[in-house]
Length: 300
Image (cartoon, rainbow, N blue to C red):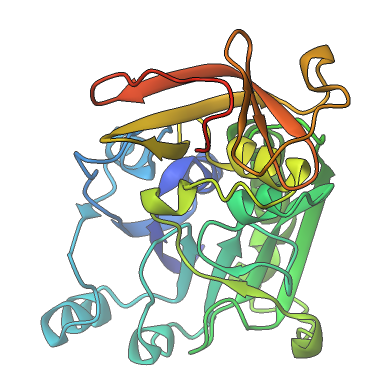
């Protein structure tokens, strides 16, 4: 029986789960193209390289898979299907055109919403009640190709980005399990995206965690839960030090009826700071640099 040759581009635990599914089903994965772990990044997730090496699948970590050398190497592998799952770089149109069965990507949102990088963090930051995974055809423009399948899950208003990620992770495996036979047969049904409904967000940097105190209590709380550990975290700078804000309570007794100028410290124990429309109690903080003395009435 002919088993189509698959090249898997992937990273993150979503990549691990989807590649594991393929290997459990006996799919003919001829190579994994992935990323070297970044020593400056907290690696809190399983990666597909673990699954690939356990089954003897060759693992490649090019800094850029779109160089002439790497495009030639990929072409020599004669892929019949390309699957991309949380691969962090764009794949060139020349590579996408190689497989006769096409190239498909698993994206961490309910497309066409939240195209681009870090979709789960952005969705939590914007207070979305529902997130999901979408399998779609890859085209030149990021996350814009026709949708094959998607599945969503509800998340709570206090879920962190990691908790949201854990809830949505099974959706990727479920979608791929439903569609892999059709992908390998070239019979997967596709529905064009409605570009008028699309939203796009770029990658997030650690400095994007800076709190803007004029924002509402809910906006600041959503930022905190979107970037709290294991992500780089929300923060405010005080003097020459940085105060990391790992968790807060928007509706605690300490904040009831409290108002002040945005960023004003309303109390020290517990630490309560005024926002654009109320106040937040900060229950888990950490100083980076020499701890500073905080005073009631001080503006952060």
